[in-house]
Image 1 (tube, rainbow over the protein chains, first blue to last red):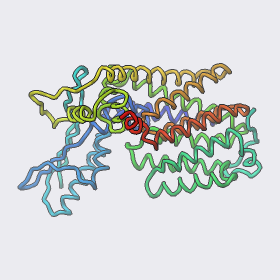
Image 2 (image 1 turned 45 degrees about the vertical axis):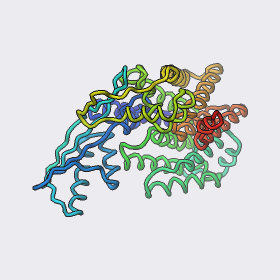
Image 3 (image 1 turned 90 degrees about the vertical axis):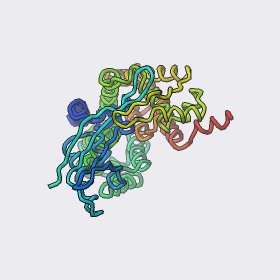
Image 4 (image 1 turned 180 degrees about the vertical axis):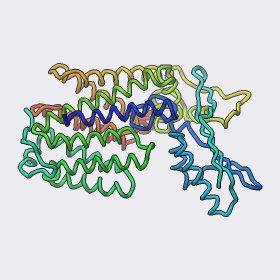
Length: 133
Length: 301
């Protein structure tokens, strides 16, 4: 019986990973489903665009070093929870620099390659709006 | 012949540990610990625990055979996966299953046989899912796009693309520029053409099908019931996969883990096969630490 516990765990995690990849756009490379080296849908070709809005501003921010991990998590699996955590990080950082912020708009995208020419284009995976209360 | 004991408590005993010295089980467990030390993983609350446990496993035969230590390592790795979710690579998951398998097998009367059985299932299932992703679930693998783009853009494959594919450094730079994503909605009137020498296209196609066939072979052979001829083919497929794949794939940790799991499947009398696995373990180490493609490029001028 004990010899089957690890393989059963592996199967359970991998099946959940496939489900998450198809429902919440988890990248096939992550999550324990062994989809690495099977697709170009990975961190190198996924990203997050951040737009911060305030009373007198609306500007796009580059992801700062302190939020790189949160952004990588959100890009790998753009769920509400991970996107909210990234947005909260953006708000906290803006406040540290005493910049007013009322809304954070996150756009998750992935690159797609033409099967013949390999010309690259971006496709939006989802947009997330976080209102600051 | 396998290593057989009566059922063991979580904290082991010295009598059992003495029997591990030169067995395939001893080599398997020590190489697992070495792999943990070669690729340290996890945040501050996981890393010291894993490193300390791995070091103790290597220096103390008693700790080596203690199920609780391996269970602790497995839980620490699981904690690292949860803390970093979803960024952990797949072999970290396999590491957690494998160290759990070691812990559980050390509590059984027939340790070697249990671990060999679990090893076959873990490798077989991991490869089944890898094949499923490549053959059925990914839209850009079988049509060759994955390898065509990856050999051109991934810096870890750059030297191999020049060496085997026949690209010049300037062409490679131009291709990387052409394959850089544009901002949302933007479109160039005259997009640059990606330079793909015919040799590179052939290599991408061959790599696509070769890796799929090899992974499918490993999956099938691992999951077939044990038999002498099957066993030889199983080892041959796994060693071939590791020998070929990890020359290019920059995940030595995965290669080492698969080889260690392969050693767990060797019989007590198969000393030569164990040596072959240990040799392959060292070859993957050299693949990972020696810029062999770059050196070949220099030699070729």
